[in-house]
Length: 172
View 1 (cartoon, helix red, strand yellow):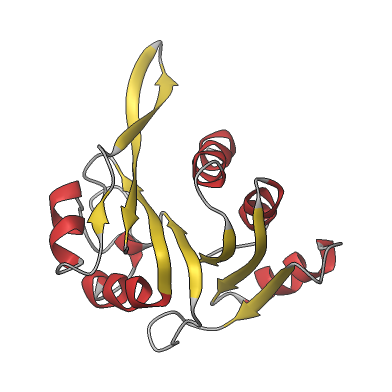
View 2 (view 1 turned 135 degrees about the horizontal axis):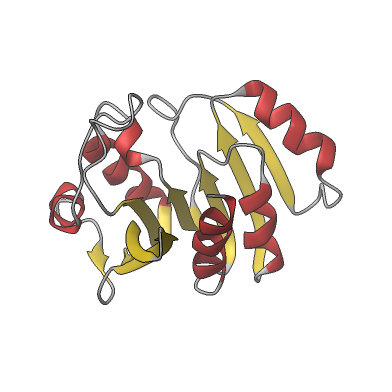
């Protein structure tokens, strides 16, 4: 699972630049990948304050990588170039409302990922089964998909299993 998460962040890091928000960043591993990939600065945000404390304890580049503990549902993000939110929207009550708010903050675009297969029955923390079409609609014209969504696969019992859908959306 960690390898798949790193792959998602590397995919995003190849596309972002400037000031980046990493929403639902956890313990900050991906935040660092985004910075090392070419972002000027990255703010990692998560509601788990213990994870944020851990991320802060491991950060060596405090000038360009910062972390904030706050819930995403009411928080108003500052202006930025890119928003990256990986494996987040299936966990929140109103993903469309949040995606629209985040699109308003992003001057260039957003990177969004979500499970490739129905997951609500298998994961008690997933509130929604999501497809690319739903994400497209939730933006209500505030962002548009740039190209096709990509599917990342995992190997299970010798078979390729779709794990994640990841897509780039542009606000400009």
